[in-house]
Image (cartoon, rainbow, N blue to C red; front, side, top):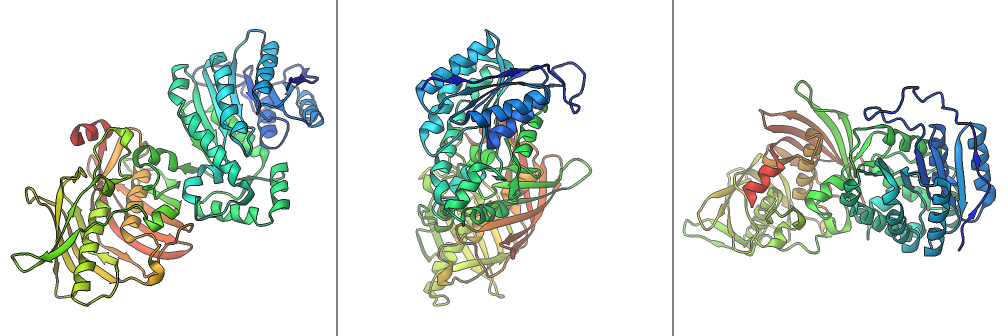
Length: 550
């Protein structure tokens, strides 16, 4: 389809009153005189971004599909405010439409470069998302000035697609979410290429944008769509609604912040994205903190306080691919029951992603699960429990040595029953007898049939460790918290099903020169699930971790 360039207005540029009058500089990246390209800029979120950029003195070139009237309304408003904008009609979801849009943009630019590319338009198909983004980025990347930005507009359900998949219906929005999620992954894969050009990649991720055509249409087709979305945002600590004007302001704030790093995902209400940085370390199935509300940052004088939130995925709750943690139990020569497990790579799936180059390591929480599995098998042999057992709590757990999941390492799990009915458990590496973990005062309870597809307590502890790490470490790109010990821990009889939310309310303090210590209260859907009185981790630079574990 040939692009139709409708009337455009190039009016006298009047700097908005909110813009400082100082000239541009590397330290103060004002937007006056910059040029931006925005897809889908005649309505909804795209319109909010176009108008916000124009109000900051940016010359904006935007695409629209089939409603010249709306595009002219945007142009008229910008002209009246003293701004500069151009509208180009055409379908950018087709190769022909993109070619025509690119040609029209360059006719306007007359050899000049641009500073900002905003990929706002989206739809239900790869053509509206991945194909459009790839092609437009290929075309415009050489024409973006060094120091410029590429911005993608994401949505909450599409960003959190993996936790929601299989346990939460997105209805008519499902195909949009799938393709927007794939689109974001495609663009993230091109961050190194953008950085080679000196260009940042940024993402803005609003919840429902009030008063937009898309929201009105979705609500007419499915009256449950908005309540479902609200349930998701509530569980993640995000606002239910924003306006297109607020989204536009958020884009401006990102562009004016020189400290924002490439790859940053921006939410609202000061909620931070944890899914993206944790996925770089753990993959998807082992992420138990999706968002973080940082209430107080940690430094030399103060504590770090925050609330980490997540939606439990179906994969996490059912553990369909998790291998057994204990192969068998028997009575050893000392008369004690003993369990044994050969630690395979599957046991460590998700602890470190393969692309990190680190060996697969058995996470500490799975050593606790090994103790639980051994005790469960022993107590069934003794007739104390008919079925599985769940963790009720323990007095302490110390992790003493790294366990490599190479398929060769065998662990011995030796629980000893105390007079009060609790267990002290030693876990040893069979090859050299070195203790890898000690758990004291471990208590179990009988599992209910209704709990078969619920998050296990050791997984909840892994979530606590992640929450403590992201609260206590301001930048996960350089430092990695490695779990050292967990203090007295108690769980309430009540589990967490797939699709439900979990909150980790965490307080963290620095411990020595290279450590952090914290405590946590764990809630789900307003119910208290558990309490961890002390959890300690060593802060190790990532390059040191690589040397130690390779």
